[in-house]
Amino acid sequence: MTVSLLARSIAESPTIRLNEEARLLRERGEPVINMGIGEPKNKAPLNAVLAAGAKLCTGDIKYAPADGIPSLKKAIVRYTEENYDRIVAPENIIVSSGAKQSVFNILYSILNPQDEVIILAPYWVSYPEMAKMVYGVPVIVTPEDGSFHPRMIDIERAVSGYTKAIIVNSPNNPSGAVYSDEFIAEIVGFCERKGIYLITDDIYHKLVFDGRRPKPAYAFTKKDLESSRVIVVNGIAKLYGMTGFRIGWTIASRRLVEVMTNVQAQTTSCASVILQSAAEGALLGLQSVVESLRLFIQNNRDVVMQELGTFTGLKVIKPAGTFYCFPDFRAYLDGSVAKTSVELSQFLLKKALVVVVPGKEFGMEGYMRITYAGSVKDVMQGIERIKWALDPNSPNEIFIGDRKLIRDWL
Ligand code: PMP
Image 1 (cartoon, rainbow, N blue to C red):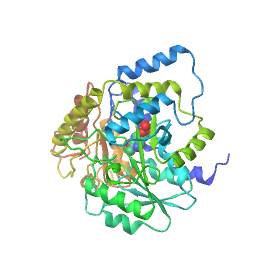
Image 2: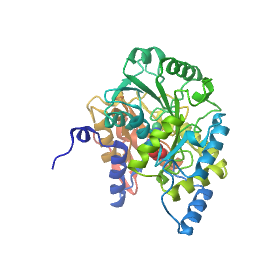
Image 3: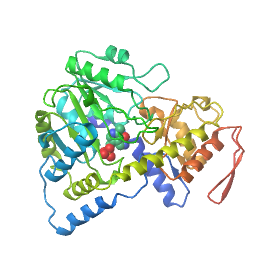
Image 4: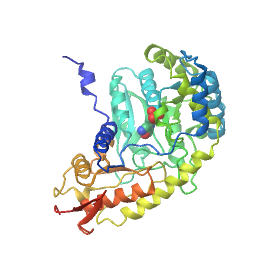
């Protein structure tokens, strides 16, 4: 069998692979705690389920317009007005099968071969692979001061005549960092001056803690949507706990939406009408579900910070949003149990039955991404297991399920 050079160069999605490993272990009865995959555990909002059910019950499930059903687009217009203070037209919106497809279709629609996309580390695993999939070149900018906050000066240095776009994801997966309003203002201004697209992946935009209210990129451009370089990506997966419904959207100029619509029409035709109805239900239903999730996660964040604070030698920056944190585990990579973040993740899964994702996948070796979207009990037990496996100052006995385990490797 032969496969293309390009396809062969695309890395497996580490989070999806780890999730599968955890599922298989669970099936075998192993009490695995999954702090790997990024999804809240709450059930889909009732209004979303009812809307999808009602659509399904009509039995009239057909192709939809490639860019999304008009009623969902209307709900997105309203959402954008309420949450971004921007009035957009339905022609500025295209609905896709998840924000993941939105990002891919954007990159496909704006990049020529060898065009560059600036990606800010630590970054969501899929951005560099997607850039490569459309024959673009990912250019990674890493903050050198040990923070997770990018600096304009580093970005400006990385920009070349080939730079077509910069992707900004704040609140950030995997670090939980929320970029400052000043930075967003600067990067919007920079991109508009230079004619570079600014793709803001806002998928976590309401999962922000401690009363902070970051401003969206739109707040810093006076240009109308047709001439602005800002492209917004959002979706229902994270805020409503609806990862399996696979609905996301893009807001951009009419011209770009037209091109993206052609791309989508020739690939997947349209997102499923049942799932679009569910998304509409979520957007039009009670929004307190999002606030409840935010408060729940903020409490988990505090628990995680407290527990991680007791590790010897671990460095962790307090996340300001999302449901991830990204501690620096380099103190534990001296070779006694692992040398790399990938080895450490495998070690923790094998010995402690906890899934965490290696930092290497997010462009920062030595770090590990820990998701704290599960129950408080799982979060506490998960961190306790990691501590038991790694920290010689912790008790060397632990109960995992009904098994008493003794640490004999430190
Ligand atoms: N962007 C970021 C930053 C994400 O973390 C994720 C999901 N992990 C997505 C986009 C994709 O979202 P969706 O499930 O809607 O495709």
